Image (cartoon, rainbow, N blue to C red):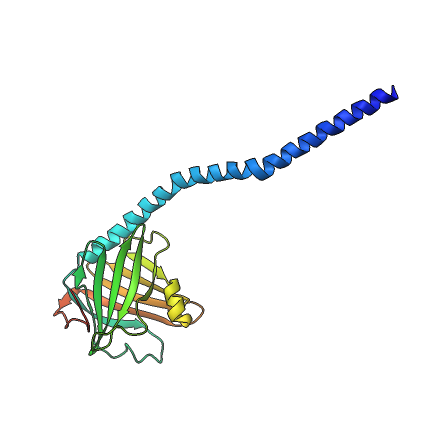
Length: 223
């Protein structure tokens, strides 16, 4: 009888050991495969939907901006730091000068300074904003093409551009910058900047009700 019990116990122990090994094998090998499969299914279903949603709002914003192509508008400072000397009390003009299939270039003229051009580029599921800065001889400034890329759908009248890695690399203090364009069709469009963690904020609003004579082309401009 004792031998039978010992044999049965040994058999049960072996069974439990095999079962434990099976569970470990499943957990470390099969479960990740199952999770990966689920992620692939989720991605294939959700990502195209998000891209379509983004493209819908962003396309409406793009079309609204593109409808202004060729026009120039006078701007005014709505918000700026108290010590700002760059934009306050200056003649400000936004010229939607060049509209291509995937790129819109809008010179931003500040007084007699024609160094600035906003470049908005259409990417898959996103829009990108870059600031092209040039010297009077047309040579790019050492600090140029900073900006950011949208990370959500925004709205048909507002698109938001958090600072990208290139901006953080060349302008560490601007790593927390967020730019956005806000538009009230037929009324105004504004260029905005907020540096997160500070009270630094700029809002410059351009009057869409009264187009003006376009300014001279920005420095180094090429069609």
